Image (cartoon, rainbow, N blue to C red):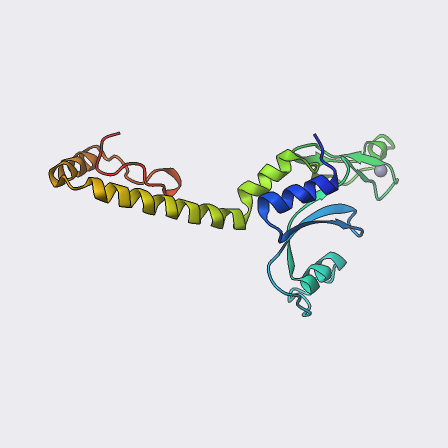
Length: 187
Ligand SMILES: [Zn+2]
């Protein structure tokens, strides 16, 4: 289900932080999801890119997180007709009208992902900021767990035996994503 740009922006703020924004690119006729990483800078990008969106982002201290098309089609540069874009995925597409007219239309690799819950979730998963937050949460959890485990280690013999079994059976003490599962115990 598609969200309105306003709703999408509200969700971006709430879930990824107020440094995120949704901006309409008049040049590309697409939605840009951008993150502010610093103050305004006035230097031209070193790669010589003078695209209006690139300049605007540089001026305002933003980086492009991702860009999504506003509609599930693009306009053919040759005939002005509509070229259907694969939805919720990325794939090859070309102008059917040009093809039927016997021309050899250019194949484009495009994908259409509407402003939606799906896109928000995707952004949450891939966001650098979210990742950093997640890492801090993980470290706090590990520290608290370690402290409680250390208290439980008053029975030293149990710990030694447990450690021995872990090494024998190659049971990892650090689980998926670096979260300590259990220490010196068989799980
Ligand atoms: Zn065409």
